[in-house]
Image (tube, rainbow, N blue to C red):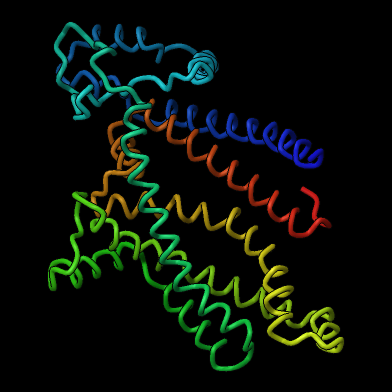
Length: 329
């Protein structure tokens, strides 16, 4: 118990620093890249005086450190702010203001927008991971348990083939084959769970190659360890050694891979896949916000994504140390 408390206190402190650094970098980049969000908010025909007055009222002309300090204080109080562009009904209202300026109260709450989009992304991510495990675990285990034989070569060929497929191309092909051509599954937008299946398949195709090779390499490496031969000499069956020791020891590098690489790939894949399929999740919300320079949404999603990565890596490291107490994080 003392180890768990000390571990989580230390890692939470480190995680907060990482999230703050990520938030500051995103916050700064949004304000130094070319393009003024005020012109998108009010429209190109708005007088320059109104543009400047609105920018000052929103605090966009203050020094970056002052803006960031105000933003962190606001987030710490539980307020993610209001969208620059989206109205309270969720639709885009950029460029529709008159000379009276900009009313923040007419804009949607960022927390509500994220709360609406997040369940769709979680559903897609969960189904994508499920498809990935269904494909990767059998192939990877077979390849690792029969290293150098045909299952190993099959795993290598399958992973090499899948990793060479661009997810955009895969998405278009699956839309044509499973939706437009045969009508088996719906593809664009979201009107029910069936609309999640094809996007999840694209995610699985992107994630599976890494996991197949990781499983096969980790299992094969443990089969070559001395403890495996010693167990067989002492009378334990090969099946018992694999089930009780090999898979347990192979899980540590797989957990680290999942936390360090797979989750990052999943988040990146969600953004691309949701945009391809017009899927109403966080990825689609963020990409639209980038096009519209909707700072509050981009900043909030960046904090949410970095916080999720930190939390998942923290849990993965704790699970790894529970499996193998020799590890120190």
